[in-house]
Structures are given as C-alpha cells and as structure tokens.
Length: 403
Image (tube, rainbow, N blue to C red):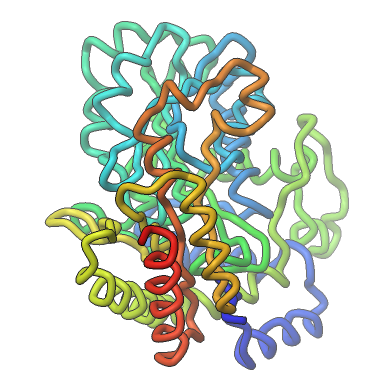
C-alpha cells in the first residue's frame, strides 16, 4: 500500500532525538529556543514562539487580542475544523465566507460584506500551501471605511486600531508571496508542524510575530511564553539556573509549550527544508505533467507571477462529477493499494456547525470544490515507481467511474 503522507524519519532525526534524550533537557529547553530563532531567521520575522500545535497558537493569539463572546471572526468555509474551533473556544462567532474556485483560498471580495462592528479578526487560510491575497486583505483592514467600523474593546485592539489579520498558515511554511515567505505577510501567522506537514516535529506549531510599531514583538513573545506555560513567569530552563528556582503565576495560563524532543526533529527538518521543498515540487510537477493530458482533470494552482506554493497538498479535482462519484473513484484507488484523501470536509458540513445553523448550500464554490476534490500522496520518500503506480491507479479509477 502506498501511504498518503508519512513523515521523513531517518538516522539524522533519530540521532538528534537521542542527543536530546541524553542531554537532560526533554521539555522546553535550549533546542526549542534555538528552533524558534532559526525559524525567525528563515522567514525573516522578529520573533517566533514554538508550541505543541498550530491550534494552540491560533487560540493564544485570539485570546491575546481579547476575542470574546459577542465578537466575530471571519474565516473561509473551506478549511479544517481547527480554524473555526478556536473561535468557538473563545466564545466568539465564526463568520464563514466562500472561497475562490481556482485556488480554494478565501474570496477577498466576499470578506468586505461580512465585516460588521463586531468583527475583530480575519483568519485567511493558505489552502494546500498556496498563499492568500495578503496585499488585498491588509489593504482592506487598513482602509478608512473598514477602520471606522472597528470597535476596540481590549487594550491590544485599541493599540492596533483595526481588525487583526491572523493567518492560518498551517500548510504554507516555505511558500512565497511577492518574494516574501509566509509568516511575514501580515500581523501574525501560525504554522503547523504536525506529522503530515512538510516540516514536522511529530506534533507542534509556531507563531510568527510580525507586528509593526507601536507593538514590540519581543514583548508579545515574552508575554505569550508565560501564557503558554500556566501563566508561570519562568520556564524550566530559567528555573534551573543556579539560585533561580523561585517563580510566580501571573495569570491563569495554558499548557501548550513545545518540548526539546519535538524541537530536535524540527531542527533537522529545517536544516534541509529547501531539499524537502525541491522534492515535493518534483512530485507535484510529475502529477501536473501526467494529468494535464486528460480533459476531465482540473489541476491545482501551484504558481503564479506573485505566488509559489509550499507544495503541501495536491488538491486534484475531476470535472463534472458528483460527490458520490468522487467517493466511488476514491474507493477504486484504494483498492489499487494507493492511499488518497480529501481536504477537507468543509466547516458547514460538520455536525457541530450544522447544528449551529451553518449550511453548506450558502457556500456554493466550497461545496463544488469539495465534491470533486481528491488529494494525491506527497511525501519525501515517494519513488518514481510509486508515482507511476499512483497515476495509473487514478487514471483507471476515474475512467471506470465516469465512462
């Protein structure tokens, strides 16, 4: 069976993890701090905070900005549940908007009409690793018209004076927009280092701070280090310094820090990340070349004049089919020992959100894209023989169902 997206675990990673286990530091320590600094240097932002998940990073940022009951957060209807769940955790309302037909990303033309005086945050999602239209989103929240609607109800909202742009960049580490890497494209971005991501730490995530004055990104980092560790004003590394054991709890914080074991994996992955991107690009290029000859194939956008994907997913669509046909095609592919997936079941289709009144019929592009999408395997150890087998399995399965 060809798997969908196993992590790259080789001797370099094993050696780095063993080194960590022998070092005496297995929780947040020197490797986590080093990993943060190397990510910040890679994407060219002032500060990065590593955590146990991207979900934790999104929620920490919403709470830092004072998002609460009665507030609204705008996000695409086509995303994983975590993007909406963190809004619910804060007591706020997810306001869903439809996506672009070509790239699955949030439709910026629909954001403006969704903004109200209750809107505190816009959370664009870089679907499959392809960057959203950040210039347009940033221009929108900075426009006089939209800023005049903004009602600040928290010290950080007053300081910013407008809607916060919080990028769910879970998929897009290493992607580019106008020659700048994701993470440096708006106020703050959150990456995922989950096991299936391009760069993994087994489980993990990172918050990239990119605020302009009067904010101090180092101060925000310091504050959220405390928030991510029970509200404790010293982490284990600081407390272990000679005579520095005494600490205080300055807020009722959370427990979502990254460990040095996870950071050890990430340090190796980051050191060879350009190699990872090149391999993933070669896989995507193979798929694009193979499927371009079929009239039924609708290929994903991976590069434009201003954007380049991180090649996280290959969201392949089949023209003119129903959701039932898509599911039948997937069954045929699985029967040929090839693992495929769907990204994602849209938010309004999930029981929890349906019960809140969300209806997929209100998001026609999302519905259409979802009904025809199949994600093909992409991972570092895919061989040429694997790619030939995958493409053959897809071609035969599609032809069987649609003929």
